[in-house]
Amino acid sequence: MKFSLRLIMVLVVALSLSSCGGKKRIVTKKKNSKSKTERVVRDHRTSNPSEVGVPTVITPKTPGNLGVNEMYIATYGEIAKNNMRTHKIPASITLAQGILESGSGRGRLAVKANNHFGIKCHGWSGDKIYHDDDASQECFRKYRHASQSFEDHSKFLTTRGRYSKLFQLEIDDYKGWAKGLRAAGYATDRKYPQKLISLIERFQLYRFDQEVLGTRPKPRPREIASQLTHKVVKGDTMYSLSKRYNLSVSELQKLNGMNNNNLQIGQILIIKVN
Image 1 (cartoon, one colour):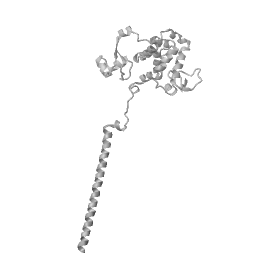
Image 2: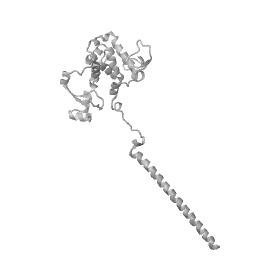
Image 3: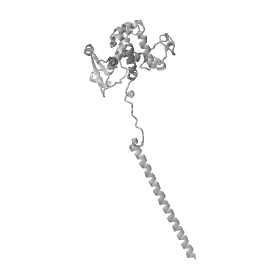
Image 4: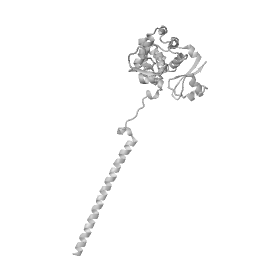
């Protein structure tokens, strides 16, 4: 009897150990299987993100590579061309004035009132904004859209008799227009014509006039004879160009009316003036 009881106890313990061992092996197998699955997913995402739906970021080619002046030109070039067709004012002149007078669209009047040409409230019944100019808190016109400012600027020039001589000039004579604007009293700054001409030639704004007229660039033999230019290509820097043409960086900046070292591919730089 004692032997039978002892035998039964031994069998019970053996069965218990056997059962525990089996469960342990099953749990281990599941853990191993699960960890392998997790690693596969993780590695898959790391090695090739595009295959698991991670979006690819594409940098815009145009806005990201343009300076503030180029962005302004790209934004308002068509508006200036349309005004040229309607009002016979060179698009190059309109764009150069906009850049100069609005700070390339960053001035307070341009940002807060879409007023790119500093047109005041004379005879204006629309919205207004007050801004310090010749006097404190002068009244300026406020527009819903910048295009309205460009239209008003064109009407300002076409409806005032003192600017009538400008319309006797060739429509692509931007130098004549720049000088004529100051002569007619548009600006008191003696360098105003030179500033407009510099902007037009630096950014080749005359191309907008040519697009409207359907003409090719006219040869300018005097300018070609009197100055050396360089067309910026990929890899050019202000430093590398200064070494190539034996100039300092500051001299290059001064020749081209620049206040930084930013270059754009295709930009025409003046290298030497005789």
